[in-house]
Length: 305
Image (tube, rainbow, N blue to C red; front, side, top):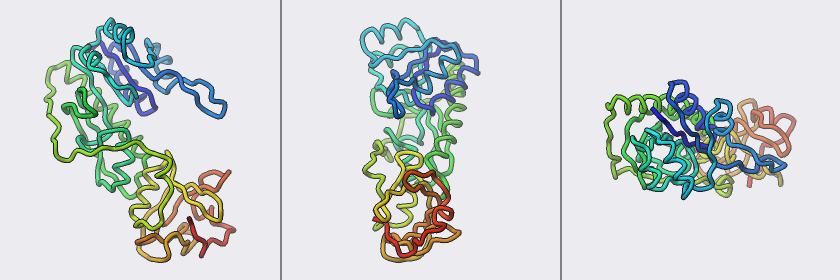
């Protein structure tokens, strides 16, 4: 298969590797232009750009898929285009170019969690499972017909970081199966159901601040969902602490008050139940387990705000 790949973040790299290993002729890799990063705000290539360069693949970094960029893509004459967290909307003119259309790896069981942050919203909302859907793209937002899907469980220990890695591996396997199915002509398309569609809105730093009047289950899920980005936080004694891992327990107290700090972690009363902080980060320090973070500090009775 003559294949064009479009992706930008680390999540997309595994899929690029899998398709390359499978022996497809990758005639072009599209990714976002270099962006400022780090303290010096130096222009840096995306993870996909770096991997494409290592593999010696033709690389394209258009600001938009319009005009000459569309003509350039059309000249590559791809059989299929695989899109993974690319970051640019594909106009109909692009969707129409590949002989077999454009396939997308989406990190949810569609139609649940269309949109920008399906991994985090699935954890935050308390879904029991999520997964990967391979779909054929259309002009809508994650609305195209589904080709393959596979589910995995979300547990009380699942973070966005761990779920990212699981879905990345799953997606890279399923996309190889999907492209092979296209070659054989054996894939069955299924229209997405209307019922059950939800939208995973983009994460914001503002929602990362913990409201301790909320139920403990909700708070613990949000802390895990926002690990590693944007990282949940709360203030204690005028200092902003970053909260990386937590679980919910039975108990009660004034919301935000630390009711215990021991070898099991730091227990904070919520609107309903107790949040047991398991990993946190003091300002200027590194993330550490909460029992270590509490050592040498008199925290019981202090209150998060």
